[in-house]
Structures are given as C-alpha cells and as structure tokens.
Length: 114
Length: 111
Image (cartoon, rainbow over all chains, first blue to last red; front, side, top):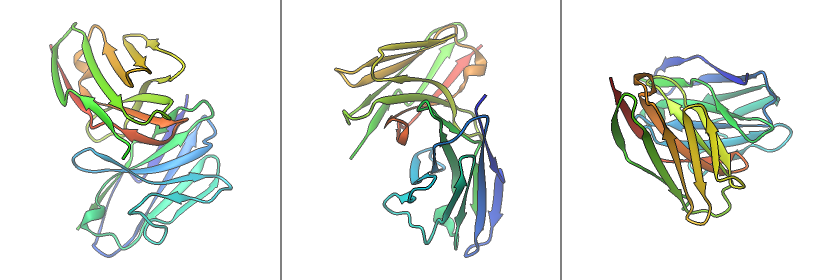
C-alpha cells in the first residue's frame, strides 16, 4: 500500500531557530509533493507544491526564503522552517500525489515554538 | 477565492446509524474530490475519493456521491461505529494538485 512517512513527528524549537522536517513516500512513486500546514483550528494552508525536476511553486504568504524545500527524487522531500516564530506553529503535512491522482498524507510534524 | 464549504460542523449519530456529510464547491475546474478522516494528533488519512466523471463510489461502509451540475458531494457512512469518531474533511482539486479543503466535520458516534 501507499504510505507516507514524516519525521520527526513533533519538535519544539526556540523562537528564531530553524528546524528541518522530512517526508518519504513508500510503496509508490510520488509525482508531486505538496506541503501544507494545519492550524490549531484545523484549517489547511498550502505552503508549496513541488514536482521533481520542476520549479517549486510557493503559495502567497509563503516563500522559499522562509520555507526552503528539497525534492531530489520521487520518494523523498524535505522542508525547513527558518527563523521559526509563534505564528509558524502547527501541524506540517506532506501530501504525496500518486500516479492515479490520489494524494496520501503522512502523520505530520507538529511544530511548537517556545 | 476558491472555496469548499462543508456541513455540518459537528454531528453525533448513534452506533449503527447512517452518517451523512456534505460539501459544495465553486470552481468548475475541480475534478478530483477526496474525503479524509483525521484522528487527534494524526495526519489526514485518505478515506475515499471520486473523479468528476463519476457520480458514485463505494468502499465498504463508505459511499461518496457527486453531483456535477449542483457542484455538491456527500459522504455516507452506513452502520456507523464508535471507531468512526473523527474529523472528516472533504477536499477538491484539479487532478490532485493543490487540494482545497473543507472546514471539517467532527463526528461522534455514540455507542
């Protein structure tokens, strides 16, 4: 079956520091990876859409300078949250798009900023 | 602004009953509509999905209906179980790219 692993599951970082999170697709080839952030109120924000060998497209209010993403192959992607502050807290989700249109999510990386 | 509206916000059903969740959308270019189930502290898990060329898809106790003309979709859960208690999200996109999520429905199945 199609699985998406994210790690770490949760992390706490000091305000102003950075943290990196990883995403791995297992059992299928992810043609694209989208990073989302889910707020404590459970709303979803799309951060960026990444397709291997194509430019990463960031949504409004999110930038490469703040959320650099690496997507070197069809099974792995990573994203860093640079200079994290309180407003960056939430559940960061990696959604991997399979070849039959379905999008599978990992369990997420919960970021707490103190 | 692309929107997906979902209702109800919360719902309680008795064990064995049928749960019905509904969503509506605006963007006529959307052609892929997944439903996700999310438990506290977990990521959303794909439950069932439908493409706009279909009007019904069934998977066990879960059935999703799609009405292209009215831009509406629904999720039916028959024989609801306490283990189905979770938050359910509908979503919409063009071919899986850039999912737009509904606001979620918190479902409680009472034993």
